[in-house]
Structures are given as structure tokens and as C-alpha cells.
Image 1 (cartoon, one colour):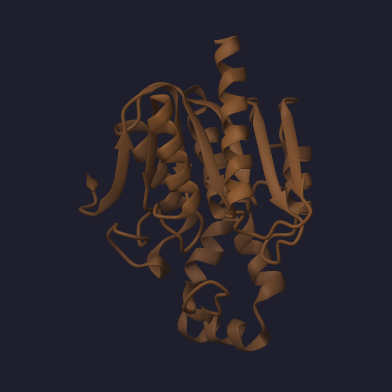
Image 2 (cartoon, helix red, strand yellow):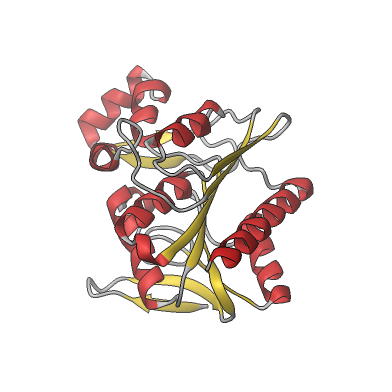
Length: 250
């Protein structure tokens, strides 16, 4: 385990595998961490192929400092930019899962010269707005207004806490109202049994992206996580194909 010490006094946990570029930078989802099946499968593949690979925990996640409920979309984007600039080298393919798909888009908009391509897995830009409008009930909204926090049930683990600040700050980073000014090649994978982020969300992303090199894969039986063995094989194949395509035009 390595740590990136930031100027604000906090540290971010990460693993970095040196190797050829374009490298792979993995952005996990909300309330997730760098120890998930997708991150570890990508790392094992990169090790075999001699490819640079980086995985990390946002502020408040995993082994990094802080609490999830004290984080925001902007802070997690800045975490990713710090890892991109201070840990990785050369061009990167960013792989983003769920909220990580939002973070990868924001990171690319901020540093387009460092990003060679993107792979989104159930990518969830603007999820804070959707959560507030479609997932929170009257009691949770009241709790948010009264205390600044509310608790959310979690199908995968213990309930987690979200903050009013995260939801309000997320509005400053919304992407789906306008064109997303990204020209890098993008691959989007989405399960059609996803109960957290509807698969139509990936269609909306593809329509907003400025670039033409955008491909979508819908998995009829796939859930939100897409972490079954066949899902991991699909992810590795997609990343490998995109990396070869990027290499051909470098």
C-alpha cells in the first residue's frame, strides 16, 4: 500500500504497477474502493501484459483518510487528478465504474491531454441529482434538511450516509444537460438489469459526448456491478481492444 500525501494534510491510498503506456487508471464507484473485483482483474491483466496500472481510494473511501459523508464530487475529481498527475505517467485509459464513470468524464474535461480513452461500467454522471429527485423519500429529504445527512439502504453492504453538501455540490458538476466536450474514444458497458443506474443512462451519455468514436455494450442479464466472471472477461476484452486501437493511431 502506498499513500499520496496532499497539501491539505490528508493522504490517498493507492497501488501503482509500472509498465507500458497507455496505462490504465481505475476509478471506483461511490462508497466502493480499489479492492473490488474489476480493479483487481484489471491489475492482474496489466501485470501479465506489462501495462502500467493504477488503482486508488478517494477521500473517505477504503484506506484513504476521511469519511465518505464528508466528501463531494468535486473533491473526488480532484483526488483523481492528483493521482493522474503525481502517480501515473504518460497517456492513460481511464476505467470508471458507476460514480467513477462521472469522475472519469470530469477528469478528462480537466486534463484532456493526458487521457487516451475511456471505458465506463454503468457510468453514473449526475447521480446526485437523480438520487435527490427519484430515490430519496419524504423522510430522508426531511432528515437532510434538518441534519444535513441521511442514511441510505445498501443492497451490497451496510447502510451508508450521504450529505446535503454532496448533493448540492454535485449540481456544480452536472454533465447531461449540455454537450460533453470529450473527443477521446469512449466505450460504455451497461447491464440491463441494473436497478441503481438505468441502462438508458449510457444512451444519454453517448448522445451528449462530442466525439464520434463511442460504442455501447448492453448486457441483457447484467446487474449494476457487472462483476461476474463473464463480465470481467468482457471488460478486459473491451479495454484491450480500445488500447490496441489507441496504439494504432499514436
